Length: 632
Image (cartoon, rainbow, N blue to C red; front, side, top):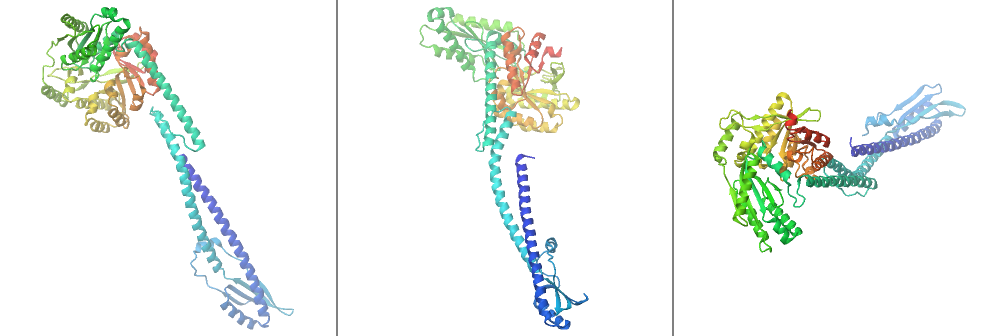
């Protein structure tokens, strides 16, 4: 029972006891007074009548006088007894027909004592007279008085109830705010409420606000540490873009990722004659030129959903862009921005750009060699030259053909889920990661997402593909009760059909919904917070978990994670690869894991390929790993 209800119950019981006691004492006090007064009246009446009757001398005359007196007076009963105690006359009025309930008459039980008087004639005893006056007038007056008292008490109770309700409402508002504040903390949101005027509640609210401020400061401090170690581990200290090691790891994962892009563009940007710039401009200004180059490149590709920018060496920057249709547009845009940046500067600063196309599964060494060759060709042509190597036939089929092929694969019942275990430190399976496989071009073996996902995005079919994966996962959970994780494309969150159809699937498989884990790519998810919160609310209502995959690059601000209400995070392999040998990587992973645990999220690591890295991850505190080590 809530505190407010307990206070209401206590107040109600107090009012009932107070008013009931007051009313009962008042009624019985009046009853006692009336009984005493009527008893005295009975005695006085008996004495008065006895004197009158004594003058009659004979009993027959007395009887006539008493008959006349009974008719005229308000008596309940008159009895005349002779000297031997035998009744000579006995008159009793019929029961009153007054508008007083019988239960009230019985409850009051107004029974005053009978008035008695002895009749004498000289020294001779003639008889005894008993007189009982009528009580109906007293009972009626007592009933009316009780009704008036009850009405007055009811009005007073209503007034006190209204006053108590107003007081309790003043208590309820700050209490509700404090409860909401506590609920917000459980949801990992930091809410500060205004202090109420009530001293006791003001102290409680002040203590809660202080705790919220301290928790928020602690998380901000942890976020700062995570960002510091991220920069140490993954960023070039001068320009802030990815260092060579991190960029190469990201490029390798894009080329090999099963659910990544099928192709894209790789651009190399070279600041010309860096050594000469050092001599002409000085080291400090040359460093500023490199930082300007990095910022200009980031501005150029910042409108894309997925990209990676890195500094490969002193003068060379690299850009990898998945799912771009043209090499010329990004290359020319970067070149135009750099030309505009350095126009009119003395001494002159120039750059060249080389761009090549890459495809899923391409050897990284051959790709880098082709990009370096394009860059060398551009350098040979002069300042701000652009060299494009757009070899490869791309996707041989058009969009319509791909759309028909994907529809046929989804509707033909041949879609399959692959299964890869995610294990905890004791090697127990937490869940199975289940990427979708689709049969393409009558192939016997269903193809991984890297072969068809880019065209699913281009043909606006990602939501249908993701819902098919969810349906297959729920059916599999129905059979073996093993938890399974499937990924949703960030683009699917923008499809208006996703949420209603996902709700229908979860309701249809209500018993299996708690075993489903939904994963969304970190970068795409955190840029769509409204849709992500809607997905989390829909999933949590049915027991389904929601988290981020390929994460670790945009987690330095925990406010986004707190707002989203997620359940878990899966760290990208580029965040954890080489963890055992690189102290900065280890510090970053440990700080990131500690921060995420602090806001109630489970932390898993993706694509762990080496036992040494797995050991370092367990030491850093992750809750589970997936990859070749987990499957060994």
